[in-house]
Amino acid sequence: MGSNFKDKGILCLLVILGCILEISQSQEVIQLNLCLNTRLVIPPCTGGKKINIILESYGRNPEGVERCQPHPTIDCTIRGDVFINLCQGKTECSPRFRPVPYYPIKASKCPQIETDDVEILTNYLHLEYQCLDRIRSRISLNQPCELNLDRCKDNNAHCDPDFLQCRCVKGYFAKIINGNPVCVPHIPLNGLCAVPDICNSTNAECRGGRCRCKPDFYEKYGSCGEFLLC
Image 1 (cartoon, rainbow, N blue to C red):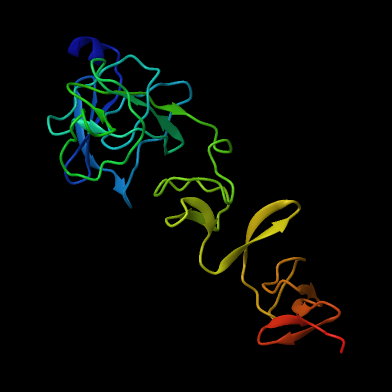
Image 2 (cartoon, rainbow, N blue to C red; image 1 turned 135 degrees about the vertical axis):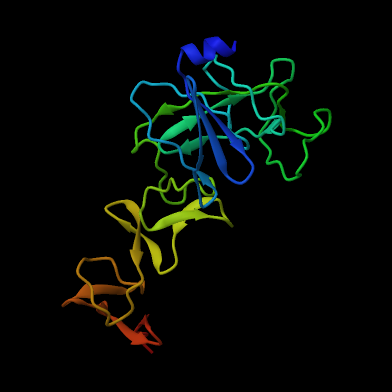
């Protein structure tokens, strides 16, 4: 098994303590610090090349068949989509254990397979990484997302931890432009503007290079109120 793995020259990456990744290719073993803001940073994919990697806490059922020996302390995993460096990772537990629905592992120790809905690994797990198209892997506003994976399509959006959806970051708000929600900066009344439909107030518009109240509306407390006829 070991010689077959080396002969194929497939990368086998092992997450160990302290965010250190052990990379083994043929006879070479390199240790690198590749963690960035809780995300595992992997060298860019090569088109059409499949990379097997051992990774704790990311995973999904695989298509690959190669097996890598995991670190003795890594015997738990969770299921879910992985998009790291435009690659999609997939995992599989040992065949003698049943696949189960995705639930985050909160305990530091491995759960019991009889009671906890998680995948249990014994001596190996499968992982296959394939390059994905950047556009297809991005998520639109208000769509479900995963924390720390930075897949929101809008550059001014992030995965909101309260809603687990792509939402605009602080200082921006979602506005429908050309039929699509876009994160635009909060431009108050009388603030400088350059394009239509970018003003913060609902009843304001960009006119003369500034956000002003629309006709039949008046400015009050930083917003535009409607004139009421007595």
